Amino acid sequence: TIEHMLNKVNQEKVRYISFEDENTKGLSGAKNGNSNSKNDTWSIYAYKKGVHYEDNDSDFETTRGGSHGIGKIASNAASDLHLMYFANCDEFGDKHIGGTVQLIEHEYNGQCYRNTGYFTDSKQENGIEKYYPFPNKYNSIFKKDTRGLKIIIPYLKKEFYNEEAIIRSVCDNFFVSILDKRLEVDINGKPIRADNISS
Image (cartoon, rainbow, N blue to C red; front, side, top):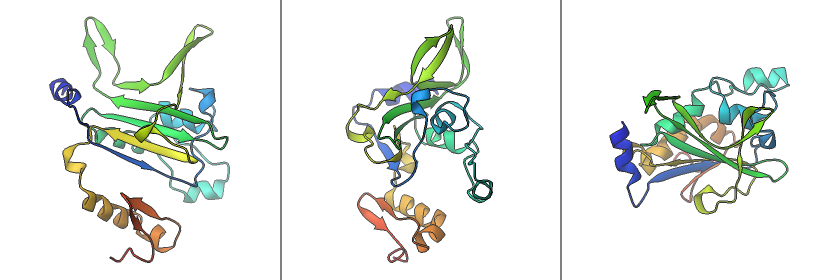
């Protein structure tokens, strides 16, 4: 695994995929860092596996599906380096960036390392290390100016680099939402809407 990853790091050109939503809430509470508040969706998404945000509206919560953990590491599995970044623009227009890498728990030079690494800032508060996201001052593929979340997966595995398969997957998995005109998807300038999904 390590040899494979080191071989990919030396590539001059890096294959990637990114996807983002617009007109959504995005993640909230990024300025609070790694908090224990159930309202800080940044903290839940960025630093907690197997935990999902629960909406205060119980009727909505029971129908929305929600993320129960697997979605937080699925993006990493699509990368040859098990690496992903996420950029967010919240309701206040604040822009932050974070990321994770899913490796293997291991020992190196007598030091034990956990399997999850974070692209994050850390600060000492009352003798405890606390994580905070970086302000997103990056450009190009990492830029996120509209409210919502953007996921960037660098070193995309070759088997996932197939635009036709991605379009088919979007049609298969979001068919009803697209037909109901609740969702429009644009893939490399190719829109998928209710009026053209059949083609």
